[in-house]
Image (cartoon, rainbow, N blue to C red; front, top):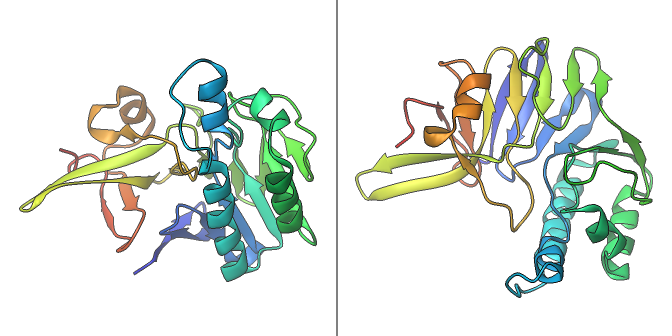
Length: 225
């Protein structure tokens, strides 16, 4: 199984094994935390020299989802770039690839804490976006109305199995909100079992939908190791 269905505020959504969220009624695909240019940012700040391929890999994964679903709208939930200088330093080939993906559809970049300012790439920009019963933003608000969809936290779930420990990025959802996993190739994750921030946001009976294959739904907190 490569996807799971979620209903939030009456909207029927599909959590994909890739980490993308699909709203078929609106033909909208939503991804969070691409963190394009992360290896360039680390090198620029004197860190480890990582192979500079994560941007290309992330764009390729996004292109595969767009090819599979043919969305009318692509919505990026902030932290699409690892910092504002990463957006400026985006190689021309990657810039052209994003422009090609945006052609013929609406592309919306939401502001994140890593990329709060406009970056000049094709598409519109907003702080938050309200569509029907849903509100999209980068980081969840503690007192948000039901129907909030966000990213920011890079949630992952660690589960103890007989054969060892399974750890995967995951969607995190309860009756009020849905938090997406990070879509970027070099992004880490925040373990549900050791995150007071997530525990404070999400109801105790929340569910985690694991990315990858199989894409399965588990209790978010009781399953954490």
